[in-house]
Amino acid sequence: MKNIESGRRSFIVKAALGSLATFSIPEIAFSAVAESSVKKVNFKESDIILFQGDSITDSGRNRTNNELNSQNGLGGGYAFLASADLLFNHPDKKLQIYNRGISGNKVYQLAESWENDVINIKPNILSILVGINDYWHTLSHGYKGTVETYKNDYRALLQRSKDKLPDVKLIIGEPFAIIGTAVNQSWFQVLKEYQETARQLAAEFDASFIPYQKVFDAALTKAPGAYWSGDGVHPTMAGSELMANAWLKTVKG
Image 1 (cartoon, rainbow, N blue to C red):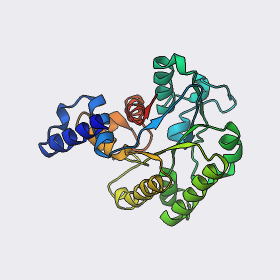
Image 2: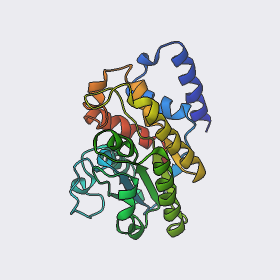
Image 3: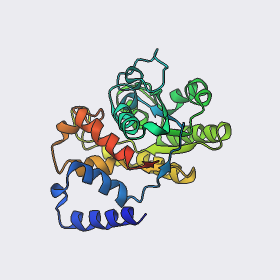
């Protein structure tokens, strides 16, 4: 906690001085997470870690591959990169890691396969990143959901998870966007409501909350938006590593 608080103070001071650009990328991720006073999630030997979400989590994974710790099954994004780091640094922990993200999904669609893709796996740590489609698809896919729909669906999904898996530790990622080919400035006023909803639900369910928007905003001091995400939603390789770095700041063994 002392290190987190120290990082938080450093972030505030350097941000005020306009010197975030002097940070290394890992320092940016650490400082953004520290500044948000993110709760740490502890993992233990033989823990099952499950990543859930939409295309950002899916990241081209082979959905027919249900093996644990499989590169093919974990996809090519932040879930794979974070998992690779955990497995490399903690061989003694015998961690079992899975990815069940599904491209294009909104919260209610995740719920349709939740029994098979979450409950039956019985994770000790459940990491969820969902919400960008719940907003984006109202702009381009004819979806009629609102931020209240998102809140109610997400709360029901989290409650269902805790009812079935009372000891599960939750990590909730903040839906995020940056200016790109699919994203313009008009997105952010409404998107902030979805982000605040995710933050509130994390507090309600005692989950760790990863402030991805803050992380990406800080990273823009090092490189332009297209470096981190071409369309403003789906991360590049560098953006995926940035996300993995932030995710890893929330866990400890």
